[in-house]
Length: 136
Image 1: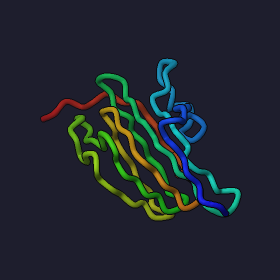
Image 2: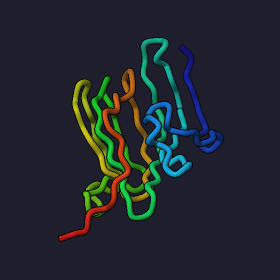
Image 3: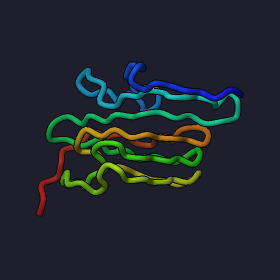
């Protein structure tokens, strides 16, 4: 296979609903968007994308999933949060969810990440839009 070079700036953001289920759309607005950088699954490879999470004001996106292949996540902007909306991981953080690993994330602020799957993307078992819990 030849090398692949992509200019992410030239790609349009698309709805994340095909991968993240219909809950990726809230009040008619895509709150999860993707730029698919490569998809080599039909050739036995994986899929790589930029993902942008845009939770509604006062709410957070809660995702529960299981890794169907090794999942590498590098936070470019924003990051994961606590139930109270406080940052739990800031931009620049890296995480690995190995194949078979159940995991979750809560996102309370606009967040963009580079996600690299060695094969198939996560199986999403729950995606909810929930109110940010008061602190204390």
